[in-house]
Image (cartoon, rainbow, N blue to C red; front, side, top):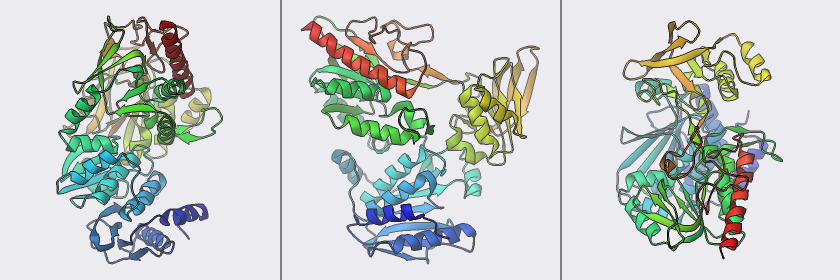
Amino acid sequence: MPVLDANATAQLKAYLGNLRRPIELVGTLDDSPKSAETRALLDEIAVLSDKVTARFDGTDERVPSFVIRAEGGASQTTFAGLPMGHEFTSLVLALLHVGGHPPKEDADLLDQVRSLEGPLHFETFFSVTCQSCPEVVQALNIMAALNPNISHVAIDGALFKDEVERRQVMAVPAVFLNGQSFGAGRMDLAQIVAKLDTNAASRAAEKIAAKEPFEVLIVGGGPAGAAAAIYAARKGIRTGVLAERFGGQVLDTMGIENFISVQYTEGPKLAAQLESHVKEYEVDIMNLQTATALVPAGADGLHEIRLENGASVKSKTVILSTGARWRQMGAPGEDEYRNKGVAYCPHCDGPLFKGKRTAVIGGGNSGVEAAIDLAGIVAHVTLIEFDNQLRADAVLQNKLRSMPNVTIITSALTTQVLGDGAKVTGLIYKDRETDATHTVELEGIFVQIGLVPNTEWLKGTIDLSPRGEIEVDARGATSIPGVFAAGDVTTVPYKQIVIAMGEGSKAGLSAFDYLIRQG
């Protein structure tokens, strides 16, 4: 039975027409079913282009695995496991980039990659259900394709469980460099290069500090920030965007089924479309930048945003759209065991806990959905809710209660995460009705208790609500004239993508209106 369906085969054949040099696929296989699938996949790819050959005499330490190697060994990348699901795109791009097709990245960034000194041997543990993993895998594959001093192996954690246990990988993507932990979680190419190139931050600071003042400066690159940038740029005014990572919280969202007119999409795909749309206009995007202070306009009429790297940017108007992040429990042990059993993305990390005992903290829609998903993978799920009842939609509650390997505990406060120094071993919760404490033995804890606005850097400068949200009026205006805000960071209710986009559009129009009225 073919590994690729007819549609995937046709698309891949078209992509392989972009190969500029021959490549070979070298498989290391045994008699297992996964090896049989891998052999079939490589054979199916090889017949689609006369520039691709496949052989099966590899000697890699991981089985099954295969190397994508350029003619003459100029560059290569390796997959240990079958890169399907979310990683199929990573496979396609690796074929193209090793085959000489240029990556769609900033030219200066690619030059930085080529200039990195090695040897740098990266290993990435991924899950085919993880929406954060492909960006990391693809970035490191690009680096391996461009620089002979760099190599990369992408490893399916679900297939190599012994190695996952031995190296104590409890969250994906998990990246190792030359055998040592390098990073965990979503990283794009620019972030990875910045960690390797120690002078990158200072060069970026110099470049940013030399920029002329903007007419509108947007802080944050999520749906609200992207919408604000598009609406401002369409008015023909000088527009800039400062973003820690373009796409924001959307990058960590799996399935999106309530974005009007689009029946289904996924966060990373939507984020890429947002960035592509913004780049259709003359918008100056300054990525990997963290704002640390807002200095309201003085006599020169320019607001100033100070950055973590020491640079500052000035603008006649500012739109704050810094979004929100996952709320933490605040229990002792949570930080110590983050990525060692404490996780925040069940889609990404759930497969690593197959057959194990887990807990979900939070009884809203996100928590109940996480528990339902995990129940199909793990041995047992304990859902712990602070309130005396679950807050999720009835249909989700009914589904959860129908699952035999789920325990629901309400009126409970998690007071401590337990571990053995290397990984989570359990948690302690207090019954809020009796004050009795109980211990639950488990291996994984998934925290799903809502969002907290990213406004710590604004305290004392702008009016915030008791929850830390930026207070705005119907036009998106804040307590500082010429400063607007939009999205999850504000007091506007219902933290939804479609609402954030609308509020961002409104803020962009309000900033333009303000500029006109100021003459």
